View 1 (cartoon, rainbow over the protein chains, first blue to last red):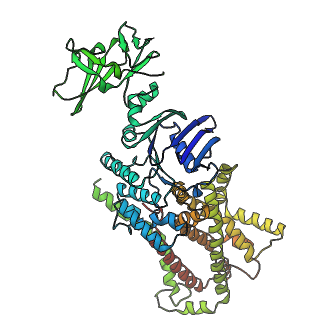
View 2 (tube, chains in turn red, yellow; view 1 turned 90 degrees about the vertical axis):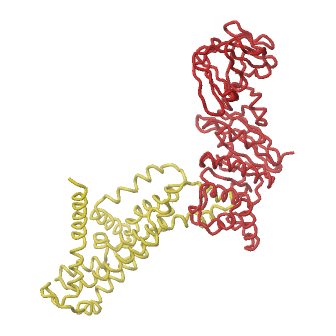
View 3 (cartoon, each protein chain N blue to C red; view 1 turned 120 degrees about the vertical axis):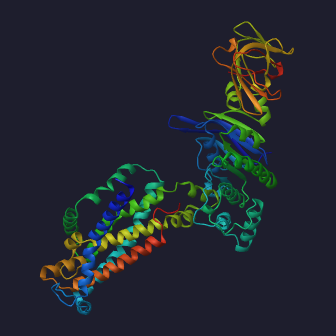
Length: 349
Length: 261
């Protein structure tokens, strides 16, 4: 049983389809990531949950109650905005207390709840500051506390970490996750950052042009992408196309790839699943192709090779290797590429 | 040219501008305290003109009228103008663009022409002349200024803060009073000051719409000068200058124009 559910949601703006028959049942207490390119409809979906967007058709229900026509201020949702949208004229305490204060809760209870929230987001002692006196990370936490204090049915986060620098972002990812777990709230967040989506989410949904492309736990979606778009949007993917022969794919040059189950002419292989060996030294594996290194990009812990493979034509094959041996193969080196059939994933094109 | 001469030229220029702006005013204030009625030197300090002013009922009544009209005008124009600015900034409706464009011409149309047309219109509709007509004219004249000033402040923060308030359970009314208005306050104050000044300074329209026997300060000053200049004008002008400059400085000090960083 899930308390927040959307079914067959559609929304059109003039000629643009923002949501096209989207259905998701959110599980209680899960952290759900909406991932998609800009203009994919992920923000529209979040704003529909919040009540800022009224869907053309379809239903949104909280605890079995239809809410499509319930205005934002009566939906009992919590939302963290991209730039936090803290009230600049109010202190941190007043910002957090806002939701309780507009509900006319007693002063004493409000003060107690605000204190508890300040503790939860580790901002004790900063309650009297104004938002502009806080760092980006602190502002983010105030926004989170402000949204959580009203015990919302669902927490919505719009690119919650988008405005932070990389370091802080990684710290806040962990913290956000911990706070969400400790409160047990169902959270839906929008991001265009695939790493963030993979790190934070219990489940992710990939959205493109208003349609749900794939929904599932991050590992499933990453390891078992169902479409070329899902494979290429979430992480990098080498796409091979050819003639399907059951569990095998015949490439244009005549080589055969063994695939993980029957395919329909398109398969993808993640770059880190491919081994790169000097020609002739590749171990015996399901799939082998020969190629020439075009470029080797050294990034410390890992090396990225771009390899020219006749079967891919002009598109170079990508391979990521851990820098275990401590040396890098030079461009123009003749290499053998090897990987297993288990990592050769059939996709719909 | 070295940086030093550049700076020197800049400072001299700034100094000249300030002299040009303030010297006539300074001389007028000085003459308000000079015993001679004919600007004669040597300067002899005296408050005789202020004493004369205290007995000049016409000037005092006109001053009172001006202050009351300017204050009432500021309240009315700021209220209507702020609501209009909110409507224009936060809602979309048919003809909005046209309405926004139509706001600006009244600022550029010569007052003489606005005054004439108002006189004709008020006469024709039976509104007539008098303080009520002056107030009506001033409100119409101040509105575009208020809408522009408040609108600029509104544009400095998006609808996101209001959306955030809504997600936290605030009704549109609570959002207006707890979020929008407090954040707009510096803009609203500035707009009210503008509206006050537009009305208080207004001569042409007031002159057209004043009925015999009632007038505002600028109209009364003009009438007095035509009859023969008396330094009481210097005295009342000095008071007005000091009060309005003090008011302006207070506002600048307490409300950052342009608002929060």
